[in-house]
Structures are given as C-alpha cells and as structure tokens.
Length: 340
Image (cartoon, rainbow, N blue to C red):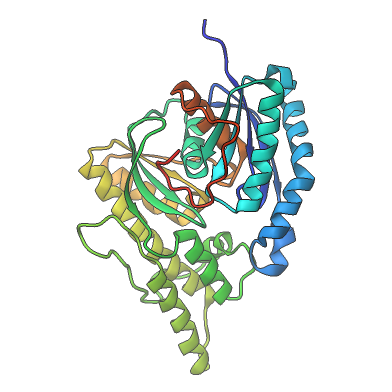
C-alpha cells in the first residue's frame, strides 16, 4: 500500500495568513486562515507593509493551530509547501522564510507553489474525482486567466486580461459606488436586488480570434455613468448599477469560457479564484454549461479565498511530478500561471 503524503503548507501572498495540513493532495486535515480585512478596511485596500507585519505576528501561531487541529506533530510531516508568487513581496517573504526553516529543520522536501495554480488545485479538494484535462477560468482580484489544464501541473494560457483583472474591476466600481472594502462581495449582494438591464454598459469581447479580456473600459463606463447622473442631479439606484455592471463582466467571462471548452472539446469547465465565489457568475456559468452539456465545477467559497489547503494540494501534485524547490528559492511577486 502506498504511504500517505502529509503536506504542511503556508500561504501569505496578500492579507490572509494561512497554514494547512493536507493528505494526498485532496483531503484537508486542517486549514487555518487569519484574515486582515478589518485591519485594512479603513484604508480601502491592502497596505503591503501592514500586511507583512501582521504575517510576522501571526505565522507561528497559525502553524501551531494547523498542526493541533490536524492532530499531528512536525515529525508526521512529509512535505512542506509554500506560496512563492505572485503576491506582495514582503508578505510572500514571511511565508517562505517560515516554510524554509521548517523544511530545513525537518530535512523534508520543500516546494514553492504558484499561487494561481493553487487556486485551481482547490477544485481537487472539493471534487475528489476531478482529473485533467479541463478548461479553467481563473478570476481573482489580481488575475484573470482562461487556460487549458493539460495535467496536474501543466497549463496552457489561452487568454488573460489586458488591463484590469475582473476582481480589480469589481473593487474599483465598488469604491466608485461608495461601498466598503472589499467591494466585490458587496456588489454581488446588491446585484441580486437590482435590474441587470437597467444600465447599458458595454460588453468588451475584443475580437472573435482572441480569448483575452479587458475590463478597464467597462469600469470607466460605470464611473462616467455615475458622474453624469450626479451632474444632472438624478437618482442613482446602486442596486441597478451593481447588477448591470456585474452582468457585463460575467457575460464576457462565460461566453469566452464556453467557446474555449467547445473548441478544445472539454467536457468540464473549472472555475477558481475569489471571483469564482460570485453568485451571479456561478448561476450564469451553470446555466450555459447545462445548455451545452458541459460539467461545471468550482470550490466552496472558503476555498475560493486565499488559503493554505489549496497550496498544500498544489505542492503535493508538484511533488509527485518531481518538481522540488531548492532552499535558496526566492519569491517571484509577478509569477505567471504556467511558470514554476
């Protein structure tokens, strides 16, 4: 019988300090997440220096909690994984320094994980039978990718944003609407109460030959709409603006994802990243996938956020493929999907 592989994994790419214990890449024994949202809310976004300092304060406590909840000790760990990028350089350094120290002290294999790959691997935790190949839509605050997962560790980037990421556009529009931070979930909630056809916002498809995305023009269109209404002293129904904006974003995401899946003859579309928790996106993608006979998979909402479990899953699959990292590995703040 093959021995179980126990992975201790750390995620500190932005403002969540997280550590998890994962067995065989799919079973979560613990997944401790310490969020800094309340700390950064008064600033309307993440302050990198503050985030780094809080990671330093939290990391040892979170690692200990993860081990205790999993009911294991350091001696039971077979593999140490950590996010190497993309992310905030100071925040990443905290996680990598801790993971390196643990791996060195235990004399265990060490793997630096691509954070975006980790988001995709969250689906292996949620869906135990999921196997590549499949079409994948990664949508988060900092990244928007349309890719083909050719194996557990190999991805072909077919489309990406040319400007704002989808989640970034959500946050900027939320700020323009006077909403609190983080704005994406608040827009999703308001959109459920609004009329998605109330405002004629553009759908930016670019051209028929590309799978790339662009959300900067849409963001500008929303801001111009709000300014125009204010100048005319007309009422702004923020629920309608939120619903119309969200619909303009998700229609483009869904249409391009379905088109790629059909072109590549994929039977499954997988969604990943923070925006994959958006109810509007889940609903429309689910409806279109059902019409086309395509299976749709996405993680539970807690696994859509930044978390250590997804990093543990990605570390495991890289480990069995032989993708180990040296202990002198550095962080890569602008790491792209598909690169180790």
